[in-house]
Length: 158
Ligand SMILES: NC(=O)c1ccc[n+]([C@@H]2O[C@H](COP(=O)([O-])OP(=O)(O)OC[C@H]3O[C@@H](n4cnc5c(N)ncnc54)[C@H](OP(=O)(O)O)[C@@H]3O)[C@@H](O)[C@H]2O)c1
Image (cartoon, rainbow, N blue to C red; front, side, top):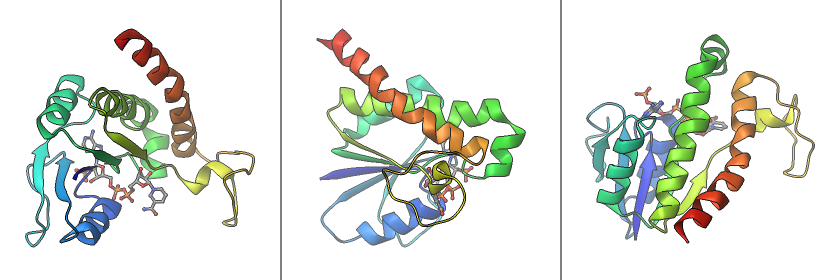
């Protein structure tokens, strides 16, 4: 089973890569820099800016993953507030590219949102009303609209 984890040098991705070591998964990552910053991890890395459509599709096609865990993101709320355009490009557009490539290659696609979409406090459940507290959370809330986008992509394929 091939698992591709995007943002391989990020906080969550590195924990996930470590957790999945020696569990019969073939691990791949995509990072902005050339290397995964963990010498002891067995992972094949592809250097790729996830906002580059051609590179994303080329790399997903090379890897042919069964599962894609999309951890790469602009994840610092302050950075998202300062550069909203880059936030949308990274958190929404690049997610669409990866989801499209994953769908085209029949890979299961896992996207990570944030509890900030539910507003203040930390005792939330998935059915709670969404009240995003910052632009970072708003960008994450736009992603479910990708379901519609993918539906349209699938229609074109058929
Ligand atoms: N950590 C949390 O507590 C938490 C809570 C809720 C949700 N989440 C979500 O979980 C996911 C992972 O979070 P995290 O804390 O692990 O984030 P992180 O440490 O900031 O890691 C994100 C990674 O994405 C990479 N990245 C950003 N833009 C890229 C691009 N254009 N091309 C390729 N790679 C790019 C970054 O690379 P560089 O380092 O090279 O910039 C970084 O390694 C995110 O979707 C985040 O929103 C995290």
